[in-house]
Length: 412
Ligand SMILES: Cc1ncc(COP(=O)(O)O)c(C=O)c1O
Image (cartoon, rainbow, N blue to C red; front, side):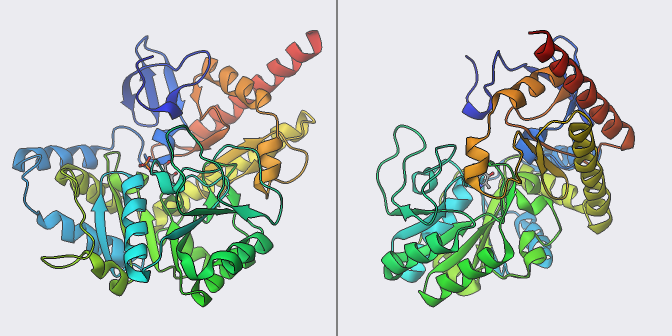
């Protein structure tokens, strides 16, 4: 099909990009789309942020790939650590998946244990340890276990899958396997499953139970680092042992990181490190340069403006669905939103997984025809390239799409 990323395939067929223009994507036929996908939450300044482009060009001129360290690496590390105090030491990687691998390896080496706890519905990337129970039927409430591979080719490993926002399930996993668990990996909200928020008590209990059992907590902030400068851990007031970040921090180029407690991350230090980190394009200078330029333009006032547009979108969507008497739940935080066809609030993976996907796919399709690109699963996110006029354009397109879908439902 000409697509090397399963996520990008939707029915009847995806469109191909011609070029980006600020908040918009233009396809090969010249159709313009307000881009609410932003490369699956990665782009914070849209497509043509001039300072990022200039920084990349400067880095290319110096050498795109010198094969020796650059000072950009330390510069960016210092900027990240100034924003996220729990990160005392960090390693850069190319993708979020590799950053997760880097954190898991550090946890295993540091604790001398092998098992990892993850939660159903949580996506942490392509590596085998975490590719379980994603987009699959919900587990029994309170249950936990080895889980089910999310795709072919994933072997049985040391992973234990527990139910998100379910303290009984979490405690069960630790009571059964506590002294074998190296780490629990958790997203503060399920970025790929209806943006379900971790309940504060659940998140705090997760950290507490892990600590009691001598396991580490890895916060996967690869998506949630777009919410506030200090990541969701700042919002919850929790200091995890390790954190992974990716997507937005690369300014549109491939970059991710794993960092946290200095004593844990020191497994990577020295001439003969206990854990070896390899990767030809790790800390890729073009990505580091893009990241610095992106972060320079992404400070508290920028977060505030983006997040208040996000609030306006969520409120506007709820008003439209209410006016049309549709049973739809709109979740989301900061600059993100998710639409689920559900009469009840979507606070559990079970509710999300059992909701019909057809109406959301229809809405996605209608919106494409009106010049709006959002994720086919019903998620969208904003970029700083957008303004109030773009938000009104989006909400107007949702209103007319919903009206047209209701008319065709009545007619059929
Ligand atoms: C929360 C989370 N963790 C990890 C990853 C994996 O990142 P990457 O696709 O860069 O490997 C993703 C990607 O969507 C993600 O959303």
